[in-house]
Length: 387
Ligand code: DSN
Image (cartoon, rainbow, N blue to C red; front, side, top):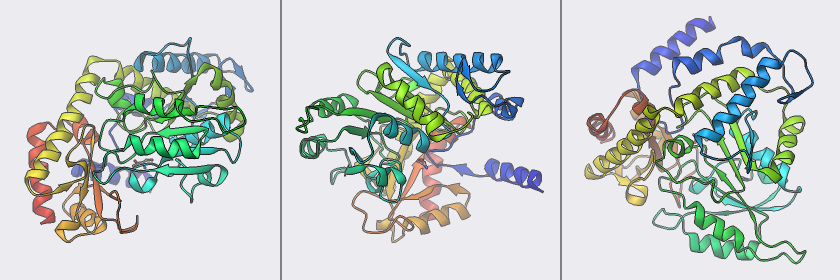
């Protein structure tokens, strides 16, 4: 029975060391909200403008979740609109494109192969089919090369520049992206400058905890999932400049979605309340400290770390020098109870199904209380297993 399989999965989760950087363990309160009666209500439409009745309490919940978003990211409702209804990050990103662009418009984003995301216009993703994407990557050293992006942007003249990544271990310079977006020359039809969207799905919790710079002083739109470093349920949100938010809201509903998943929305609110506590700041700080120690320790054990280290919660390891592929390394680690994901490394000659790297992260183990001492043990364990 499914309930037995859920118990089995819980037992697995308790037994392993989870180093997947996009996973985390939400609190019991978040889980309770997810499993609450909120799941049974329909609330199509925006708060206070619903197509169903019986939504007085739900309106209060959605309003409060939005208020919490403003508080957590220290932004004002005067300048920003918040949509907490997207079912996932991919839908949120697609909704932004559909809201602010016309089909076929040009977008510049980070390539999946060098750290981006499928929904940043990969050719197998609908975002890549609906719009004309060009991609930037990283330099040979693994760092984003802003000069190169500037050159591409000047030539390509995108209407939107997307920044944000799923496999980039360094600080993202949002100010620099703003400058690049502002420098995009006119296309001839009068438009100069590009919109800037920051997909902060991986680092939202770090931004909330004050350990990564915020995109809000610079971006026009920010999207994020809520289940990663933010430690909430599987869901997403879009925060956009006031003059853009109406079109984006319409792209979510009725454009792409039906009724919001209110249990997720409630759970998101609980996670945001938790993110406002001083203990969350400590958590975010510890996530980064742990990642730095893990990277340093692996390096001292002879591992090849992309960019030589990390500024955030994740580490990319090139396992080719060990005579292994990412798939082989991941399988060996799983056999020993250490869970990672295989990942392309910049300029990888191998394919995504069996690339040259693995991606490690500290959000989940930090939630379980791991500190620097444990990270040193984990690095040694990884080394023993892979060597
Ligand atoms: N799949 C997520 C990750 O692991 O980074 C991004 O959607």
